[in-house]
Image 1 (cartoon, rainbow, N blue to C red):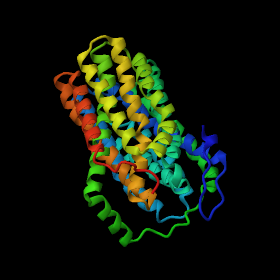
Image 2: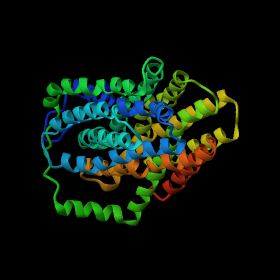
Image 3: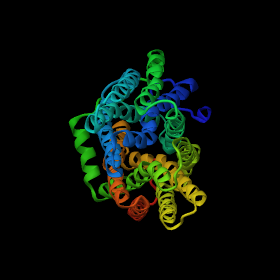
Image 4: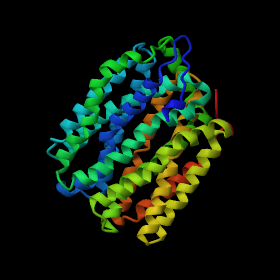
Length: 399
């Protein structure tokens, strides 16, 4: 799919198609261990005797840690010309960080180490997506969707692998194995980093930061922040509670749960470039509104119905549409600000994985009472994002 992407960087030669492939593969490698955590969480809960609320808190703290790194990474990417070296460093941070987390003796030490490891993965995103959106201003959502394929496939394949690895290994050994892709890509990127286009933009200044702050503090800016925050809260609520729900309510084992969880994300991974391209043409708002409404309806039906096969189908629909519209949501933030793409995307990722991560805690508290109620929470959050999206400009597209 990367063959259809053509980047045009002002003042520099366009990067080769092989580099675009490495961006997608690099995204997959960095997201592999974080993706594994979705299905590792129930195994950790069983080993440590955690409640659903504590599982939700663990995932939220992991995401919150990542959120702390997004904006600094975006700011750094707008100040440093050699962005290839920054991207290469993220792989070592991820690989070493998650490997060390596997030795955590208790809940809080594990949460801290996972949060620190997640910062390395977080740093990749605003740097890589900043390069892409600067180079293709007319096809922002499309190139973001192409880049997202690697990360989403990590969230598809990593839980699937974990489901089978847990039949042979404990959660610590499985996490160590899951850190290998990042370390391997860190070695490869020692060469690939030289192909990443250098930044030609002037370093971001204090006045630039002030201008960005004023944009985000405007009425429209607050509406944008609220919309993407509620959207990702719904997304994380569904992902964080689905493995516990499938195993606790319907009695599926880890391998079957991994297959279902991977299927939930596969369709969304494949659809992201096309949904992004659609939003480039028809506008972000209509795509974002439709996606959140479909997810809200599917989530509430999970609560209402009881047939396991039907419920699996509904979970696939809910997760797929939320994954599918992610590139449109990110592109909307760049459209809205119209400058400093890496910094803007760093802020967007911070909101999604920081504020949005509260969805894991809220859903976990509801699931502590009854696992089915987690999906009521997800439905309400997604419906709120749909309503808030009506306040956004009708045709957020190219700046």
